[in-house]
Length: 451
Image (cartoon, rainbow, N blue to C red):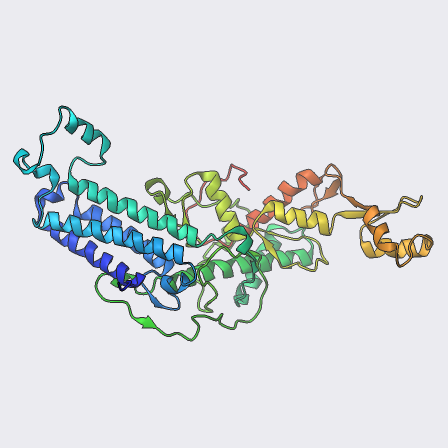
């Protein structure tokens, strides 16, 4: 038995949607049960799913190619597409009058008499009181399952995740982003100001990359159902396009999808007003309206399939997209790394820069760097700082910073405890990160501390 390609199944389903919509337009009786508009809405959902994972494509960008080593996921996708196609065909046969639905059958058409009260029980248990309504519900449920499957495809087991680097040249934004930080945070150190400005530019790069990658995946989706997909042979299907290096972004590799290809075209994402945002408090975009209507939907920022329904969870997702945090210490060896979690960023600062080495040989001096501590031990306490013993001495002398210890914020110079600094300094960086968002995204209240 020949196995259909996923792209062929998707195309057949697209044709099935178009045929069902057209048939309903000429069948008023059935259109009152399931309108052509509702079927079109589901077709739109189906196209969003197909475009998001390139299920309609052939070649190395296609879902078929990406699932070549994930047979269980491929089989599940094929089964769902087969079920969807069968539902569309059954609905079409009813609307065209080729088959009588069970709700229009007379008693003489059935093999046995129904038991008393069975019709009422059936109406309560089933989604619709007609077969066509039930078929439409099955179509909607199958598409929802396809959305869920796409989230499984993009979220492999934790042990398969690793760090990756986003590199693309959008350096012409740097000057304006650095100026924005200077105006918004006039008391900030020059080096940190430039680092924070570059971080904003990096976020623009990442959002632009996600949008461009999505555009490439959805290419041709508007023709779904009208023509067969063609196999594309592209030079950059499997390799990242060479780009000038700007900076690295820490990012979870939580996709089976091939998201390496980037574009260096015009950036249409960030149109945020520079003049009005200096003194304004920027806010996280509103939870998309579609989140209230559908279980799964496409994020307008990263174009991943989500099932987020609450404002706090949405806020957390937006910040994860933006990677709002970077190290604020001047001589950090990973200064341009961006963190998507406040906890991960502050853990780095605490372990890499806020650790002390305390001399345990009587003088009780504190040292902020391991090198200074080793020099002190070798000069003042040479008898315990031998080559064989120095590593043990370092481990026994290291001290974590006290969370209640007071320090100054490197951005505004306010004095507060380390415990309070994590939230305080994090919010400074979150405000700067929001500056990279496109102006087309609606603002919302930013009262919750969801990160």
